[in-house]
Image (cartoon, rainbow, N blue to C red; front, side):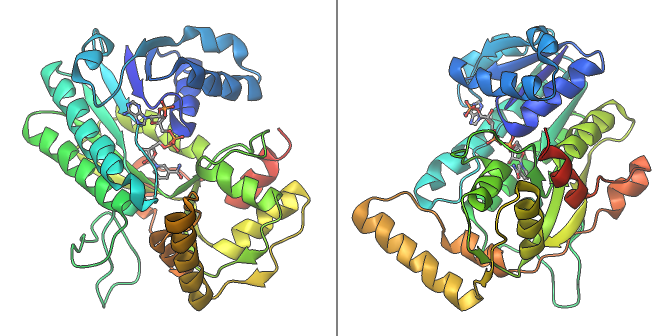
Length: 333
Ligand SMILES: NC(=O)c1ccc[n+]([C@@H]2O[C@H](COP(=O)([O-])OP(=O)(O)OC[C@H]3O[C@@H](n4cnc5c(N)ncnc54)[C@H](OP(=O)(O)O)[C@@H]3O)[C@@H](O)[C@H]2O)c1
């Protein structure tokens, strides 16, 4: 049997569907029964509602060790997708605790229960920092603790350290480092989760674009590759999962065209972004508003990061789905 953490999230829900379609017996953990509906809505969206009942749900929190005991009974493979994704400085402690301590708990159970292989869903945020002579970030690029990193990046890097520690204790692992993961377009216009937030902002008439870039990947590719890696002979390695490096303006334009709304037309320069995050901090601090943009998100909006996907393409002899084509397709679901 296969255990999935984060089964109520974007990646976990798609992974559950993919694994069931491929004949696996799956168990998923949840914290709040209402969130299970989100997973059901993913199955409904792809007209696979009949497969939803195959999931065995167990209530557990990755920070609550006793609750994980039942979840690990008779488990052979584990996909650890659960994490807290937040760039809001007020979430710093919880982000670090959930992502590092939570991953340490999962690794410890995998060792104790002699799991065959753990697939850990990390992030390109945990990859290294380019040195002066380097141009593209790979799995080998070294993390430079002197460089500024978001709390989220530090937490995913710390989580990877826990997974690498597992190898020393006899565990077989594989780590995937996806870029920004694009999933289906949500039906609700108020969704504020992951890529759904990107779609929602464009749908609601986002006026600004930036000229930074990063790696993007579809959720379909993430789950397909994770499932292939866990059953392969490959072990104790990490792989960057991006389809391509895309400029934010271009991705926003593709989303706007797919949703048939106006494209963002005003360039938000790095200077403007620096002013905006400070205003946002002021409003959040003095008027108790939720942070919309932080120093870290402002910086990434104009940073031009380039990531290489050569390692995974060569290891599995695969190619990625085209991001722009994918967005067009999911807009018609
Ligand atoms: N989305 C992206 O663009 C992206 C990019 C690169 C890497 N990643 C990584 O991919 C993984 C999956 O991301 P996602 O987009 O699917 O995230 P998501 O939609 O926000 O889902 C996060 C999942 O983690 C669960 N979770 C959080 N804290 C937990 C805890 N203490 N105990 C048990 N479960 C907990 C959540 O459960 P609840 O429903 O109960 O909150 C939810 O199921 C994460 O590790 C993330 O770091 C994501």
